[in-house]
Amino acid sequence: MFPDMVRMPIFIVIIATFVTIIGLTIQAYLPAFHESLGLFLPLIVVNCIILGRAEAFASKNPVVSSIADALGVGVGFTLALVTISFFRELLGTGSLSLFDANLFTLPVLGEHPLALFILPPGAFLVIGLLLALFRRTGVIKE
Image (cartoon, rainbow, N blue to C red):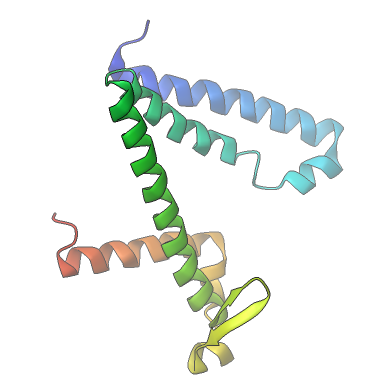
């Protein structure tokens, strides 16, 4: 129906449009519900990007390869999120907690945490720092 080159952007624009319309409608008629949803409603678009990528691979490959790809990508996203979250928590609070149990606290950051890292821009900073580290160590080739 659409050329492969524009298929994914069209898919994302359509989903983003519907999510925006629904978000604005909920904000207008159910403000308390919209407040409780917070950032989770726009994250539907991110989920659709991931699903669109999986669909693009699955449409051109056999079932077993598609399952292996989906598992690999899922594990990769999970590892990336855990790694980014680990460093954001450590730098932003100076400690690492798991289920209300404080695992450890860094002496310097425990007293003077870098609060920027727990804010949304902190994720981009951590990603940039990890990318620089991976390039420096040769894990990622330029």
